[in-house]
Amino acid sequence: MIFIVLGTQKFQLNRLLQEMDDYAAYGKIKEKIIAQIGNSTYEPENFEYIRFMDKKNFDETVEKADIIVTHSGVGTIITALRANKPVVVYPRLKKYKEHVDDHQLDIAKAFEKKNYVLCCYEEDNLLSKIKEANEIKFEKYISEREKLVNIIDSYISNI
Image (cartoon, rainbow, N blue to C red; front, side, top):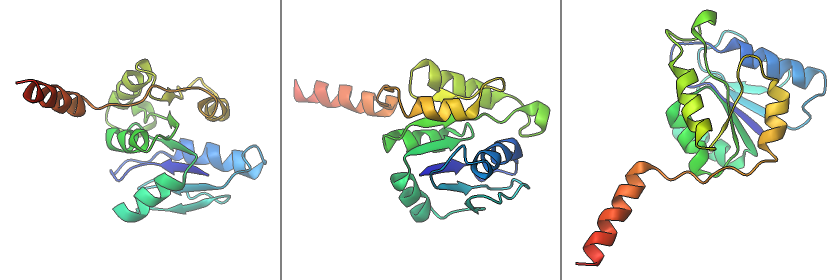
């Protein structure tokens, strides 16, 4: 199952929903798709969607998912990485009025540089990125907070 996550902020990401809806309509994606569409105005016709999910439902859907396709929201990315899910990040872009600037592109590039996710840039084929994400080996995400706690714990153990 593919879980599309668009966050809870006031911004839409209709481009992603339309592209995935087309893939589903033409049989290019056959697996089940569920989307949390937030404030997007486009409503998919070929897969299940909900505007907003409570935390319990969201976490359960992440666990069931085979892959996460998401806007470049740090919280969503980290949640998916902690659940050991392949992640394709589809950043919101200012020129489409999807956000106030292109910081989501910077976030996606930073996670991709560490080999935690794949980023679907504007010129990329999303379907290819989804297939690639299912085939490659990503680095295991370890938060900086966890690293710091481990350093402190190791120090205290050796005193």
